[in-house]
Length: 443
Image 1 (tube, helix red, strand yellow):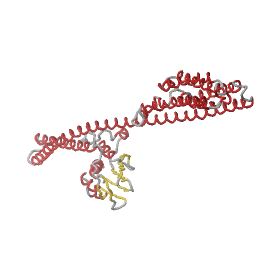
Image 2 (cartoon, helix red, strand yellow; image 1 turned 120 degrees about the vertical axis):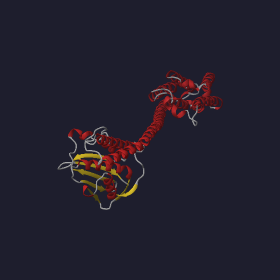
Image 3 (cartoon, one colour; image 1 turned 180 degrees about the vertical axis):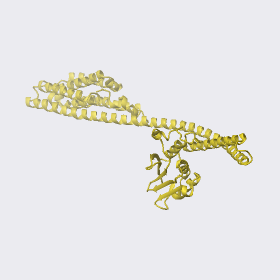
Image 4 (cartoon, helix red, strand yellow; image 1 turned 135 degrees about the vertical axis):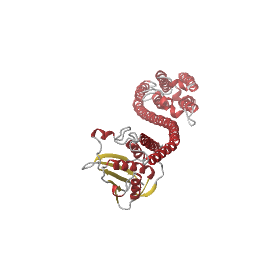
């Protein structure tokens, strides 16, 4: 165990160097035991001057040791870090404290000297700078030395019974004092170390959180720049593509009756119209990508809608009506608060895909509204997915027959659903076809 006290330990530096605990405060704490030494010297001087005659039996030698102790106390008071610099310095100071205290006891009455109380101060001071084991060992050594002094010094002035009683009594309580003060010092050090570690961990976590926040801010700026560029592209290209598609559709319609069936110009116009339609579909897909990449991945425009009316509107947008679409809502007349704008994009795309592949059979849409979630199933009688595509149908650039979105349709749908904290799953339908399951939070 290190001899450096907890207030000087590296682990405690995070809580010491603050506005409430400065270096001057640490120096004050370190001067406390040094001040006690000065007080001990003064008290021993008063004992020699005012105490009973028995304490002045060896007055000359007692004064000599008092002078040595006074010089030693002043030196340590001047620089209290002497006793805290290393294991060696702590051991030397503890040894000097012990020797001086034992000498003063020996020359102020031995077993009858009231200066025996100095040994308890020595043990308390040692507990602050030495380990628990070293403190207890020192108390045993001090007790043994005191026993010899009590038995051998001034034997002619004190009865043997008194000397033996003092020699055995005080060493036992020295060990008790060492165990108590050393234990408290050890517990205090452990508590301070634990507090320092927790404080350091909190500081590290706060620094990590600040770094994460700064990184998130930089990523958000980068994202906003990308989103701005994407919206500029959509804005600049959508109008001319829409005009091109309208123009080609009009030309195909006008030349439909005037041109011969095998006329090359008519075939070229049809091809031009098909390409214009493809470009228009790509722009719609790009718009869906832009919508699905919002920072919160949601428009935030939640409103209360009638579920059946909402699904009917999505079917109309997909070009299915009447007998081509069957809608079932449980419970009937259910209403819920949801992000209708984004969710309708998804359902419209899925219903349109189901109608395109359903081989003339009606598309079924089954909705179930629970307390917290809305489940929508879209069922068709199409060919479904090949087994090898089942795990990857929602990945980018995986397409089926319709290539208007370059294989982005289901991937876009999944991105939007995930942005709304929902799930989308695909499974085969009994009797042939595909079932698309949407599970969305509502409220």
